[in-house]
Length: 286
Image (spheres, rainbow, N blue to C red):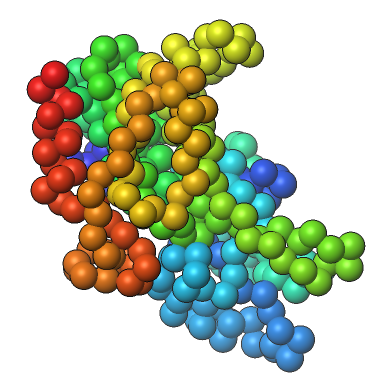
């Protein structure tokens, strides 16, 4: 069901760890490629950029320079594109847009049927998909976090089979800025991103190490992953947080329509559908 009921256009914004703020879902999930020295036509460059449709980190030419820290909704401003036609180049040659500010942020109310579904669920599942543009936008809505934390049911986070541009970034580690190193979120950081999205009011913010397990299991009790996933999973550290980790049988991503559509290659894996459904039903029936 739709997470939000509205006739207004919704706009996503992302804030990176280095403070950069990006406007628009496409710009979040498809980082802008670096400009070459002989690039003269910015409009042509923009059009070429929009032709890149695959989000797998191994399939695109560019990544964000810092990890995504959080996602939010922004006021829809029809004049934004007109006011931001003139882009500027940063020192590394990438295109930079005028950044949004906190006054542009909004917190939409969720579809009442979504809250009803949560209150009647015997198991809550955070599905597969792009973390910051598919999964978290449904979780940062007003009241969703408190609705989930108040339910004493199993809460399952499904990890993807491979990284995309939203869970990967490229950092410069040479003094002259010539060498780029690709880094990726691990399972713990994905868990933290989900908790941060759900805990919008900060009610579960606590530095007490002994309370971290309770805080985590208010939102996530289990992690399922397709066996052979690219995700780095430290099962011992997750167990200390109270999260049970379970591997699910998988198949090559390029052998199914959804895996191929998402940019999956022969070395990538997706869940075996029947095995995943059986595991979820078994858990919900306990």
